[in-house]
Image (cartoon, rainbow, N blue to C red; front, top):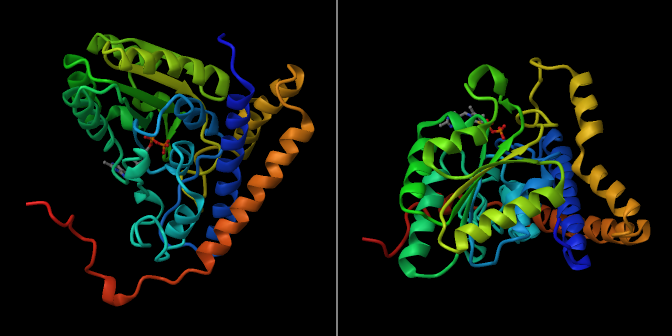
Length: 325
Ligand SMILES: Cc1ncc(C[n+]2csc(CCOP(=O)(O)OP(=O)(O)O)c2C)c(N)n1
């Protein structure tokens, strides 16, 4: 394993804690009925977005999913407009009209969460094509779920990226569940990474609950892409700890299963144990980070709750991109 600087280790912890606390806050307020629409939580999958995005530059791109808060935070998204958007407020990323599944920030290359499962592949391929045509070495990362790997767009995206050797990294988050359906009942291969052979590209499997391992494997795939060697399919094995959406009655699995798996896989717990055992961060340093993030989340919550809703007169604004055509 390559040597990782203390700065990067701190970044791992800060980002994972930020995602966890942001999500716990959203969960609490959704259950109080204060948040409109649907919310899908990323709790337990923090190491994936964090480890991958820690290798990216601001000018690189990512495409996200319906479970997109972690990706946005890891790519450098701001907490205040994120929180405001989820609460449907005017100060949100989409002026409160998009909600959780439509957060985007083009200024940091975050091309959007996506309510369409499997909707990110071709956006990432387009971004990769743009980088290639512009002659720069920016890469595009496409995050997608195990359920999304069974969509036709998966084949189109991977085939095109491979055929044109585009700088795209397809990061599968195999959390074992697609809504109420277990992965094993709908997918013909044991590993999603096994499908890479069909496109003549590397297929790599990594423990998605270990931020260090994700960081290292993503670094290799990103380096390959920047060097013009084409795409990689990186499968991160993880588990969806929360319901498919907040409020999911979860009748398709037992509480015991979830608790047992989370106790063994929680990426934050794993990080803390490793950090202490190897002297990477002290308990005091981690507590300081916890305190600072808790304050930032609280400020973003106050910002959201103190912001107005968009007015009815704004209903037909922002429907089309101005200046195109
Ligand atoms: C094209 C399309 N089909 C179906 C849905 C309904 N839907 C929303 S999330 C989801 C499951 C997605 O599972 P997966 O890709 O594994 O992601 P996860 O929710 O596990 O993160 C489905 C079927 C949708 N939003 N879009």
